[in-house]
Length: 336
Image 1 (spheres, one colour):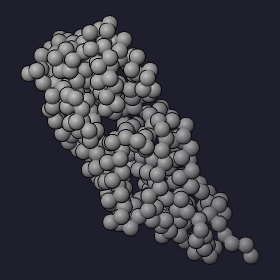
Image 2: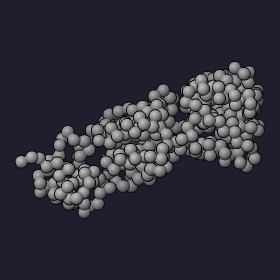
Image 3: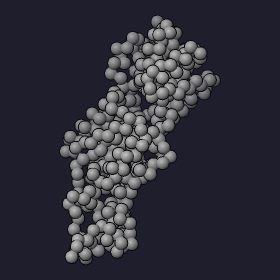
Image 4: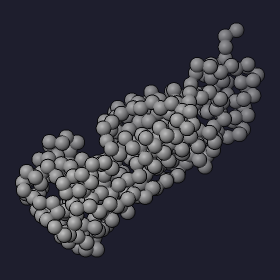
């Protein structure tokens, strides 16, 4: 007599295969009555889990997948450090996947992970898309997912971010207080929520002062961004720049050197940045520094909490917001 498999159990019970699979894992998403029926039939038919099958009840790979947009980035390097600390303490292995900002690559990675080869997934999204079906499939298959930094408000998974909105207000107000009358906001991630949130903070800070926003969409390509910023500085002549990500601030320094704009005398610059050399730039760069290590550590702890507790309260609609640090340096100084 051939062994009974999940597909046969699902057919007998008139349930989906994923429902039976989650019931066998004792998932909180499945009702007690359904679990009872599944367990009873499994016992009656002498169902034996395949020890090599992923995601079955009681099976653990002790492996977590980490899916991030960039490999060379000070912020994500620190995030990885926080994740590694927790994983090592709890005896978990890590698999890293780098999307390079490519949504299709993110979908491909997540679809591969949805078969249960890992116990959970930590994800910083490549970009926000109306189609999150790949992430919903991960949820449907009972694989815990925690989003960090670049998240989607359309998903009710646990999210771990920093205080992007409040920090953007702080950064913009700092430039205003330093005497800036025309502040340019440089963005490169308009298709993800973090970019929109930072932009909204910038706009909110300008509103009471009656200043006209100057929003500049940059490119992922450094040389193209250099040309965009150079053209903007020559044509619009702002006296302040708020860079939403650190690489834009660094490119601003290069452009200013080329066109002989003096920082901070002619133009003041502030940026979201975890750049370890920010204090060594000439002049030193004023930054909003995110708690990157803590974000990684917190996200990993939240994920392991879900994996171990299997409780609904531990895995739904929770947003942990960590406070960033404002560090004033010479790039925004009123004295020069």
